[in-house]
Length: 479
Ligand code: IFM
Image (cartoon, rainbow, N blue to C red; front, side):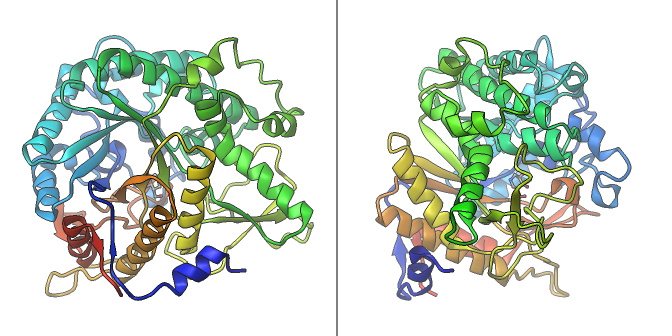
């Protein structure tokens, strides 16, 4: 079932497309996925260290212990980006490196690493975009209850303040959370992410405390960094019903509430959606939402970060069992509380090694929807990209035509959304480097730069050169 956007993207004229003046081009990474050095300079374990060391959790028993060794290669990696000519770099701070154990004073050695990184970026004219939380909760805070507990949000506000005090003189653009849906629902619901709990009520409680952490952190940043630009990065699911039936429309509504509006409601509208409260009423009374929380969460944002990879296709379950993959890993436990009557289907189209359907029209539709639902906040694509089975050929080259095709299609969709009125300010490719892809370990390569893990050698792939040209000119070439 092709949407209008699908048809128009597919039949778009074979012409080049120019992005608006000032459109920001960058790469995205996350601390645990690239840094390594997990026990250096005072860093303490995060929930991902613990999870990865638990047998059976991560493919091949891979861990982030070394990852891409970015902790020791930061200058090489910044030089790589400078060579590729991008204007911005989105990275995350490891909470247990900045504030070991998640309480008390900051670690100066931990902060020094990020000061060195930011200084190196600024020296090359690359804008730093810092994310405070990309899933590496200090293990001690999980031991004290983790995100289902309110105290974790309070600890997060203290950590945000430490980070802002130390780096606010040189970092102006701050993302509070990356994909809180994954933290709450994969971490505490299906258990396919750290900390690996499988309790739907804990997942909903975690979602609320992540929302609260976001609101508290925005306030801490604004109190300390006068010209701070604050955003959150949400993996907004573009949810499509399988058919035009009312039952399938209701399934899509239910998943949209659990995936998207559970965050955009409080953050951008100051309320949880009524339908979400009703759908989950048999599980929870939401009494962990205290007076004043919603006002605290509802902070004005400078940008809304959108992470997009693939659409989500749902129907009302018909009991034939011909479904279940929701693209979020295998678990006997659903990440979707109170949604047992929803079936997930593989969307049409080619799939990537992650099993995700390639569909740029989902990005177009999503950007148009966000622009229409939240016209007051400009958008930025903080993640988009593809895993591919890349390898270095005998001459040392890495050719990744599937990534170029994916980027071409998705950037055309972004351009079209901009032309049709969406205020999109930039695009960050996930990811700069091949890296630790969570429960998939190192088996999935998302980088524009290939990493030879045994040696740490970096090789820019063909897509890195292609993307560099788009970033340099601001023009997406015709096919
Ligand atoms: O690698 C992840 C990233 O950490 C968060 N967004 C999706 C990416 C690809 O799965």
